[in-house]
Length: 509
Image (cartoon, rainbow, N blue to C red; front, side, top):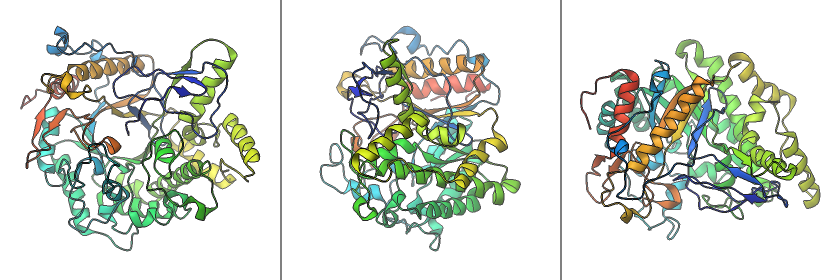
């Protein structure tokens, strides 16, 4: 998930985001804005993925009290574990995650095609600190070493993403890069050999530049492009992968990554949306619409062509935000409901709810379209598309399982606040308290099946470059070897996971 500067205006009021790594965004196009104080946002750096389309479970109290530097508490130093750790099921997924563009590097070798973020990184001033475009964790070269880190942690699963450009250099399936196939194939084989199951995300914010230049997900053909890519991945890696996630956080991609939007961060190359006869307000809704349809198409492809042999699961990451009204007043309650429509139900309702977008969201955006002289802003599903989306739930998910696919916080900023950046006791506390809350959710009946820490490594954090660090392992970006060193949080997570899984760590970090 990209890091975003704090902006106080949300839904006409204020969103308070007290935890490290969290953020509030300004109003999305058409989002309710009125005189009410508005919604108090309590979501954080985490995403959930039901095995068809997101899901929601109670998550940790975000108001974590962080001890000032030099005042870390004794229980953090001693690695006190959540008291309800014994409540987690024995088959609970304990995972950690990365994403291809954020860690791999080697973007111009072995036949990989050019991607959108390759171009963004070449633009002076776009990335904080202006790092060299080739600077990275070098995970493409150091994947065996990173698997050793995963083994030492004791995790049951490793979530990573596949670079579309590394598999299909032009974005289309008529040109497959065998070196890319070999890389991910060997990575999956090595993981499975050591008892670590892959969780694979197919799209994590980046795409082949040739497809972006054809409109990316503004182009309805993108549904076919993505389905072709997914089929190549299912064919080559499906015997090793049990869990597939189609898209990472559709909302944030739609809002940030296609065209610049007022009051929002710009993760785009500024697609020429005029060629599609669209205004900037229409862009994010059409992008999200096409992604939902692509997800449904890929799900159906897997069920019909691959499921019988591979027996895997296909999900989607719903990166949303939960909010509460600041007061019980009707205006604040309305503001909160509208906030939730834009930050969660927009993507989840078409699959888990009615099969369509939230009615209040439809009403607001249809009125906005009339005001602006547009035919529509929020696209409409055909009856056949609604059927395809709803079938995903009807066939398998009466009680949707929820996998938390990201949960993490950044190193304390500025870095000088720590005498030793490896002693990240604030992150230890963050993990402990969030895991404890997940345990409480399970005890209350929520179908949470897994927890994923973000991230394995300090990595490239989009517009923040390498200045914001989320890793449990520190990466020395100035060393030729890109040396990995465990932080206190890595040692703590090893202890937590090993205890929960009943393992005896063979190599304490």
